[in-house]
Image (cartoon, rainbow, N blue to C red; front, top):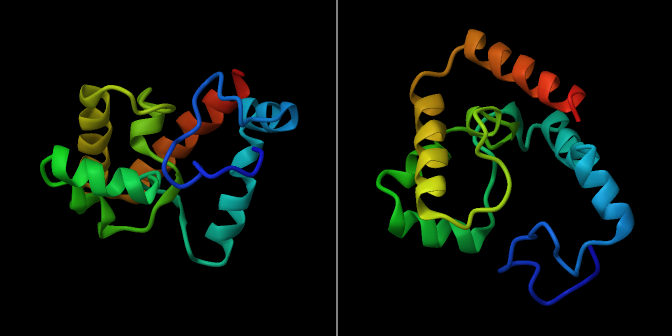
Length: 130
């Protein structure tokens, strides 16, 4: 993305003018996740867990979605249950946000190694189908 004043308050959209050609390529091939992979290597993130939201979204969603803060009970992840279930991308619809958060909470409450392996498998399958 180009440097901009909206970076902390406005998430990127599909036809966002701030996205460069290189950025679009990186995003379409999931290569924009590479910095998060390094964050997981140093322990700031997990490979699997609820995807992090922008701080402004955290504040807004906490008021809109019951039990939203439960998703913060684990480290954020590069991939998550909500993403492999189809809830990835822009957060324009409150119902979409609620489904995404409920899947995050399900993950936090029912975490298991088996669930992580299933999520990783589906993530790899989704990446290879691009």
